[in-house]
Image 1 (cartoon, one colour):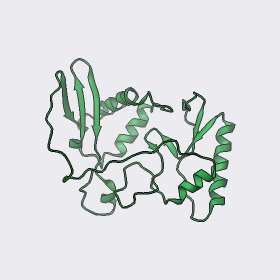
Image 2 (cartoon, rainbow, N blue to C red):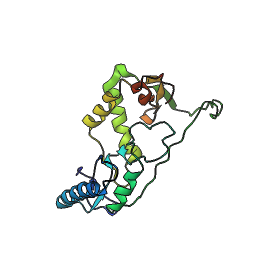
Image 3 (cartoon, rainbow, N blue to C red):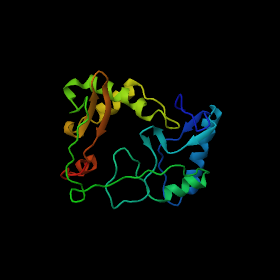
Image 4 (tube, helix red, strand yellow):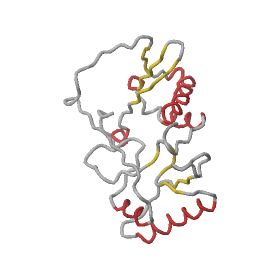
Length: 203
């Protein structure tokens, strides 16, 4: 169980992380999911969410395989949804990914907001950038049911683990006068293309 995780009623909630199972083996899937649920309930969980590791590592993509794989999203064959439903899990949230192409993108929009400036991610000030990301996360997401703040160490590990992929120009940070960072836009190059040895032309 992740300390502080609660469901919509405020009761302790447990997570089942990502699991792998062969096709045509619902018996194995039911066995492992049932064992995980029993352990979590013995630790005080009133409900269980799966698949989920933390606020940004959750869900299971079981379709749309003709489109690019999304960074940090589990990618499983469609039969995984049946395994989860057979174990008693219900779909409570669907995540929508929008795919933009250069042809479909609108013309560049220029706007100004008095007292607010934007800048790019600066890896030469990595600790300061990690602190910015860490400070913004709870301000943006803490109203969501089940949100559990990550520690500074966890956010540092997430960012440093992606440094080889990150393009500084694709991370935009908004800062307001006398307030500091107030927003962040993160675009990650498609590291699946890199893993395949292909030119990286998607974000």
